[in-house]
Image (cartoon, rainbow, N blue to C red):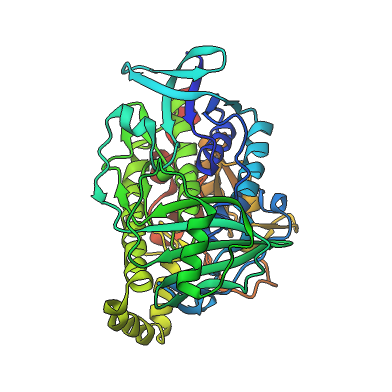
Length: 493
């Protein structure tokens, strides 16, 4: 085989997956049809959980000075996300082009082979390998690999070629997205609902504003039709009364409220991630963030599979875990669309949401949903509040007297066993997985003002940052180590 994994698509999902696979030791080729990155901003940030995922790999400093917004919305009804611990409305003002540049540099530095100008054409799953063909400037090229992952967006050619079902609801309305120049617009960061529709505006730099225009009554358009700045300017004026026709646009695009999800994220040796697996209304910046998290969930599992060390069912858990997350994503974005984009008929629903959001428990629930901090996977029996949930960012003091952070412990994408008590028997058990699991004796730093997530318990954490075992639940660690990390070195000798 030419490589272990072929990734089709060099957007944020594909590039994140490439880096994750390289950290797991897998050989990776990323095939991208575009000769160069578009440079278009499109997504303008990411959720709190995506921020944590980047932090787990040491990537946050590469973005420069990230800023978060404590105030967000659900369906246009604003509230403070920090009512939920660790939550915020995400990193704001980060163009998708910057996110892609950071991830491409990272993946390349780890040894990912990124090939631009390679347009996916077809694939054949032979059962023991996948063969794919690509159109390039040098003619048709073929690659064979153990697995192929489609990260090629909402109109995924991989999804179609592999025969994945993609049911859902068709588009009912068309909307516009553009970076306009020389229009001097007032900021509308969280959107403004007016009689003729909804508009958003955010400054991107000197004289440049990102706008989103959602007019009522605009039908969904054929994606092959070219959008013009004149169309966008006309829709903006119709809704706001403001004339921006004197300006120009760096680029314009259209999108819809179509909502679809693949019924399975894996078919044999072909898998889907990101928009190739799920499309939805872009509410709350969740699309890019969900794709990144798909990649972080899949990467370590697929790397273990190609290395021959994955326990039975590990790769299939990618679908089990992430498909359920996708279902919730599609539900919350559809609900937000009804509340935010509906006409007068949606007024009673908006009023009800406004009443409900006055309650802190409702705020916490909605903040958890949009920030993705409330994800909980089925990781086995137990009652500890962290079981199945992400390990929150905390400062730790090690037995050596040094200070580290929970995110720092995950930089190498290995499993981590954090033991506050220095349990020698636990360490002897974990020694059988020392090539895959790092054991650290540490307790929350005394200077830490947030809640202690461990409450004195040892925790076993997967490479994607989710807790799969705690000593507080009474079960031994060995079964969890085998379930998630495969046989011990003693079994193999």
